[in-house]
Amino acid sequence: MIYRDRIEAGKYLASQLANYANDDVLVLALPRGGVPVAYEVAKALNAPLDIFLVRKLGVPGHEELAMGAIASGGVRVLNHDVVDHLLIPAAVIDSVAANELRELERRERAYRGSRPEPEVREKTVILVDDGLATGSTMRAAAAALRQQNPARIIVAVPVSAPQTCDEYRMGVDEIVCAITPEPFYGVGQWYVDFSQTTDDEVRDLLERGRNEYAVAQERQEMAHSS
Image (tube, rainbow, N blue to C red; front, side):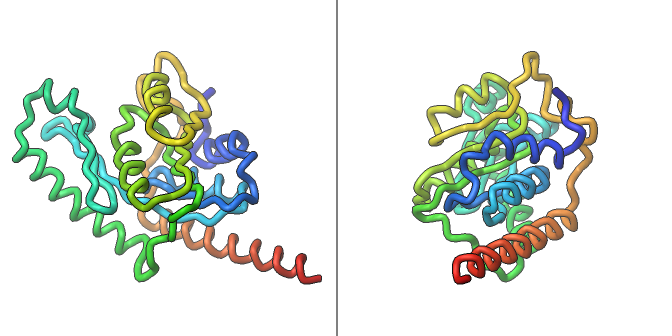
């Protein structure tokens, strides 16, 4: 199965999460590519949508290779297999992490503005991205989120490397990988359109998600009071 785009992937993923519809869940997207996917999930589940910021730490000169990731809350997760194999010094990791922290903070301002971070304590949180390859980015997100004491963490993606999906089963409460093709190659191979999601698209989808959820809640309250 190959998805037409992230919208189709989000709709398909939402169908795999139908048992969470109208539950007290919060959908958090990993920007930027996870936002169009999560928007469709949140809409289908009648759940609020927000973002959870995380940045990959790329190996200098081979940035597509993740040596780890950082996330909101100051959490850093390292891919020790990569770090040890390439003998990457701590100073290099610190330098890359400092650069990525600046971008993480920029995105926080750009996407959320003055709005506070969502309250996750004792909630069921569905973390969504457009796919999992090594999983280091999602691991950082889950580790940071766990510090905020949610009731449950569910990782949900339209496509994942089979090994990565299996490894996750011990780290979060549940993982939903809609497809786990073998051989995997890379996330983008399973999308016809895998063009980069822009900052403007992220802001637009978050605003639409907030408005649609508010309207849905208002309708529910009117139905209950009538």
